[in-house]
Image (cartoon, rainbow, N blue to C red; front, side, top):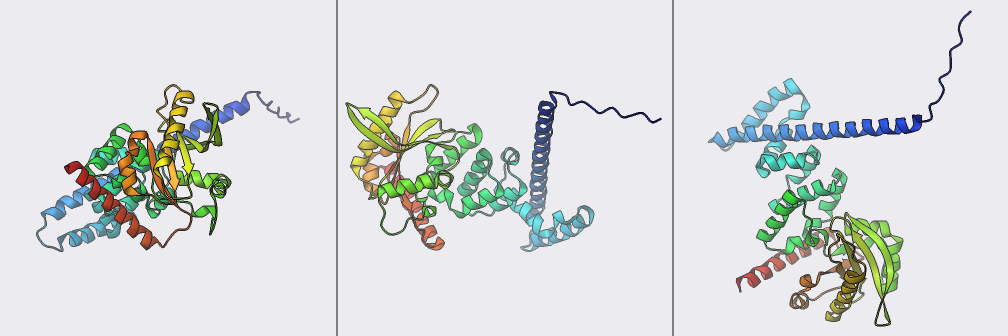
Length: 352
């Protein structure tokens, strides 16, 4: 007679055990993927750097093209299609625009070769460094990186409008200390075309549309924002005031007041937001947090007024918003002009 098989009795702790094992395996797989990505990126950088050394030795104008094609044929035969002449040119470009091996190694812990390949052809070194470091610190996917570049994020940051020396200093602090500043976080203008507002609308319509599309609004604000509340009431000397929107930024570790204005920025708006910030600093700020900061979103602004009011000292940022976007070419032109004008003004101020 054949013996009956004894059914295994379920152990009470099995679900917990399985969950722990799943987490261990998933974590190990992620670490393996990171290690593979990092190793590949460093390999491609090293290949590009080695080819560059030979190209720089060449005296003829077409020497670089000849050596890439010749080397590629042999490498493809031995190691496969990852080393076509086109890919080798990417590697040479990689080594050329990122000459520091330590920086490349640090970035390669988070950025894949696909990330690098998108960044290395950006025309501005500051722009390349910005996207590389923001990609690292906020762990963007390649799709997110593409969207950020396509949405001209760098040109819209307050950082891009500073003198080049100051931009380099802030990016260096971000690279070495993971130090995120408001100038890296806030942008101008904000693209609010997803709200679907057209023709005539008022401040209440704008606020309601933002709350209706809160997830998209937070994506436009950027990484790290968490919604706290709307129309938060604060009472000062028996008088009630209402903050339009209140957020918290995890990496800046501070509350963020957002005030919505249908018209151009007015000097009086500063006093209103300063009052809110001082109240929040006194009654809502928690231990370990930085002082609250404000963002006034308005339909337009006067550059001279903003400069005279020295809003940065008050912890207030001013930005316009667009509910309908112009053509990409026009937007790019306007942002480029804004960056150049801001940097020119900064040079004049520093030379005084």
